[in-house]
Image (cartoon, rainbow, N blue to C red):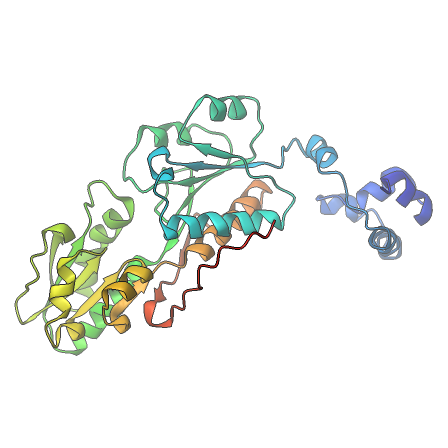
Length: 322
């Protein structure tokens, strides 16, 4: 394996000058002329040289590891949505210099890694609105990024689907069809962060379109609603099959849940939406890397929702591809 010293000798510069060509610090790279910088990088490419991550880590006081904190209880029944986010994170990390240690719940191993400064940042998958863990996250001196939810505190970043954008699009449609009232059926917004965020915005969204709004739990939906009322559903329930069996209800309905569930239950796909889970994970990992590397990163990334009518599932062939 070619060394930095060898690259320096081939480029006819000192080892220190060669190191400047691979520095994250633009001031150091600026000490080299364009001709010298180009010569060093060309030789490095010819010899497939990559700077030592451990060496860069020592120089930058960085571990080049990002932790992924997952809830213990969800590990036993990972949904396709959670797996999609995980794969998105993993794909983004695989194209970087960073490693991705996993932590299932806040435990002694995570505490030890944080105390030993072995993590540059932390990605968090959490559905609950509140948790004692969030207070611990707020005390960390490393960037923390929450996936598919609002941030876990004032110091954290978040990447999530634009649920308000989804609701706004449908409210505009309902208003255009002459409806004057809309019911929002969510999962428990006292517990779940995504539903809490949507429920909090719903009254002002209705006001924006001159609509009256009502909010209920999706599990309490009995399959009926007044004729002059449109409905937004967060999540899937068995009773929705009864709802959509009535002609015309597809024109006053929007459902946001897993595309597999929508297809399996035969819902009208034009009124169904879902998260782009893989994209959420990818964007989250890239955003956290940028934050770790001291770039200017927005506190919140909102990704557009996806329409189920455009969803094309891949067949689940079990093939080993190590």
